[in-house]
Image (cartoon, rainbow, N blue to C red; front, top):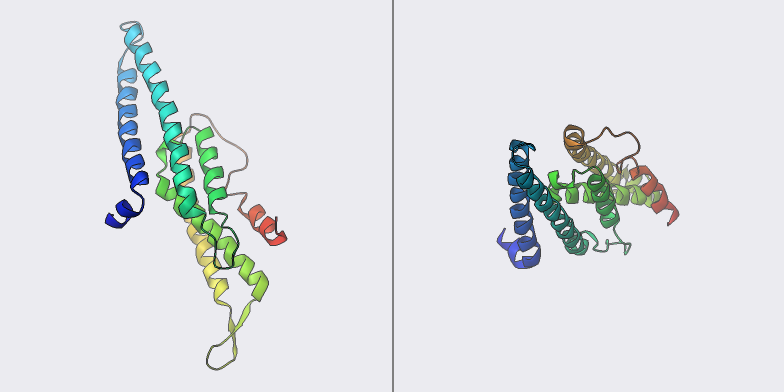
Length: 197
């Protein structure tokens, strides 16, 4: 944690303030849930107004966190191409925010998911470029490409992380959801990356 505090002090401060805002949000939610509108309508209205202000503050904090994460997630890959992790992170966060579940998912989980999908796409691009076989470094014989097993590993990791995210959305979403999800778009991103788009 000391390394993260030294490397990203603004991000650590932002995360601490988000935790404090989330705690205050839950206190207000409990206050609103326990107050009867007929008994104390003014207190209920004030709590709802304060809750709305906190929600807008949380949105601003998330926007600042997204900007801070771009530095980490957007680093160029070894092959010189830009990582897709920022795009995946942002589209997933927007999807969660539209379902009113963005405050329930830890930023670290979203980051891990975005990096896993981006690395899976990078491995698939390498398989396309170099093929399914590689040359053994000492014997020179053909061996299976290491990118295949890495691709499978990153795909499994991305799926597991997505199931964790989607489970929270299923349990806490205000409305039923049907339609495509950011995880459904992963194959589309892979195809676009192969075309160079």
